[in-house]
Amino acid sequence: MPDDRLIHDPNAGIERLIEIMRRLRDPQSGCPWDIEQDFDTIAPYTIEEAYEVADAIERRDWADLEGELGDLLLQTVYHTQMGAEAGHFTFQSIVRAISDKMVARHPHVFGDESRDKTAEDQTRDWETVKAAERAAKAQTGVLDGVAVGLPALLRAYKLQKRAARVGFDWPDASHVIDKIAEESAELVEARDQLGPDEIEEEFGDLMFVMANLGRHLGVEPEAALRRANAKFTRRFRAIETALAARGKRPEDSDLAEMDTLWDAAKAAERSER
Image (tube, rainbow, N blue to C red; front, side, top):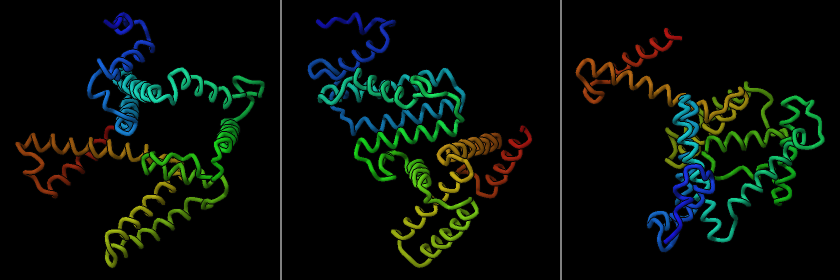
């Protein structure tokens, strides 16, 4: 019989969680579902959990954030266990690597460099260190290291930011706005004269430039879109509530009525500010 003392010790910390995952993945006595998983099947859950952490922060729900951070930590332990099984790495090697990286990237805290720098100076130093790390990995291109698996909008923002460091950028936001008008016209042309592939391409170009405008305005596009999603959800729920008071559901209504209720919800929000 396995020794379950660590499993049931509430004060055992991270070692308890690591052992729980090891047992879940045990080929003889583990959970059939967990045993069948691999890096590819677990990766979507990891991304989902990261977004749920961001959602809890945005809602300022600290009790929920505690749980979501635990879920995200579980994802790290899950990948670590699979990596250990394949001989790639261990939890301790991961901790050592990230600790070494943070010490190396903060010589003004852990080394002999002066802390008498602005946030801008430290950001520039940070990018210099990261560039050296990419070079050590033979990532010599300016865009190397921008993860392909990032959400597309966030990756667009990061690609543009990286290119801007070497001068490949518009001088100010007005030029980006001009480009948005150009891309919008090309999208209309594709819609009217071309096929689905061209429409998708032009739509993508327009979204890419919109992300660039956000960067020029100091707006992180992923955060802005999350905020817009939350606002849409909030106002649409107000529509549902108002319709329910009339004994109706959205499918019983029409656009004109729902649009009026939307405007009312919008006005109510503004009056509360």
